[in-house]
Amino acid sequence: MPTVVEIVSFGYLHGEPPPAHLTIDLRHHFRDPHVSPQLRYMTALDEPVRATVLDTPGVAELVEASAAAVVAFAAGPNAARCGTVTVADGCAGGRHRAPTFAMALADRLRRDGLTVALRHRDLGKPVVQR
Image (cartoon, rainbow, N blue to C red):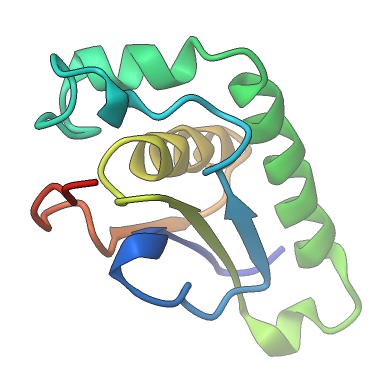
């Protein structure tokens, strides 16, 4: 197993995805909390946003599948040489779906005993008006 799993959440509207072994695009398959006026200016640090994202059908299954993919990367014959498995997950603005998913994946991997570094590239950026 690698020493560290790095998870980076980001927003595609703020630039290119960061380099990663596994990139997960949450934009098209999962409803965007941004469309709700009550949630638009909140972030994944707010419970209503996290509850909305985590209650979305398919999200829990994607967290499990992504955790399995990380374990598979970590089991590879060159994993010890690579040292870190990097996961990047993105949504439109990087404030709702991606950071919530990243936190859930980090929690899941930590339960497996992995060391996880979590970073939210765009969480603190202003709401994108669209």
